[in-house]
Length: 248
Length: 143
Image (cartoon, rainbow over all chains, first blue to last red; front, side, top):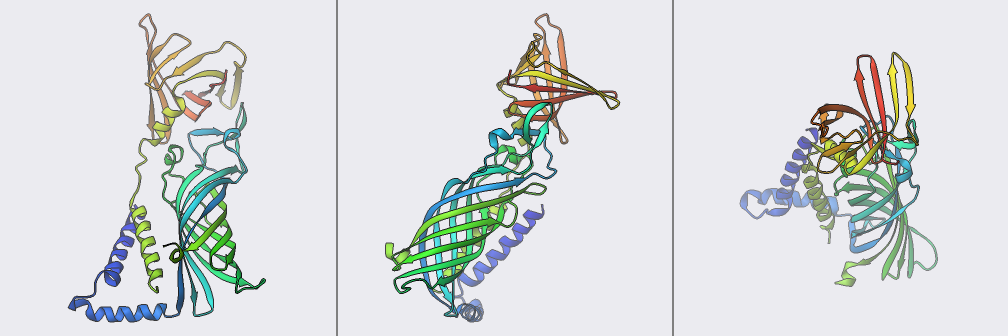
């Protein structure tokens, strides 16, 4: 209920902001407001320069670390069928905007769609004695489709000829929105969150501005599942990006 | 060029808003999952545990000729005692129950229900409470 109210508030705010800033300010009633908005907008973004839009794609390798706590359900899952402490491959693609703030601070904004397959590592299991084996009352989903939005702060590493090849260390937060639904197993108790926040750190190699290769590691900060289950989603991403203007 | 950040934020905001507005109804998911776990399998009784006033008596049927019950996806059931009928999974509060309405070929009816303690793809624990005696039935699909 609370979520629905929040979403409605957000919707209304969004629509108001959208209409106010984007749609139209041509009519007389909005003319005065437009100039105020435009000034505020210009002021806010006057220090943002050199925006380059990139197309990016690559592979990710992901794993969930799961602690079940005192989670309770009517179902059991034999962990010999589900417990695998491995990173499983998926893929992603999207857009990234790179810019420089105040002629000093390089940053990037990223919006990416990801297909994530995860290994599932259960840190604690339970017994269903006298049955032999290690059992869980929670079965983690291992397939997700997410929309990731990340902000990175970029720092150039002074290595070799930086006019030709540039290395960057990037770091920042990444907000992942689960677009896919949950399996029936998790729909019962609505176990998975819609959002998960992850920390993102990576190394990037820009070759003559022709293309950029990157490797990122994403560490879950918030749990992907509702309490008392704690699920940390970790990923390694390997990819490449090229300027949109070079392609089209 | 400068308006790229606004476009990014606007698109994200829109998508997130749409996603937040979509809440999937999960009514019936528990019963559906229970039917999925039970269906098209033969469940063999492996152990029973009867607890009366903190005293527990266990029996094992592993490796012996034992009671079994088959649940089919069309919600029919038959067991080793010759009872044939239908079953339903009822959800009362947080408690799942398997309700069986069956009869023998002689026409004698037998309607009974078991509460679910734990249900899995290959292991199931049912229980019945009668006064201060609780009996747990441990079933497995692996003979």
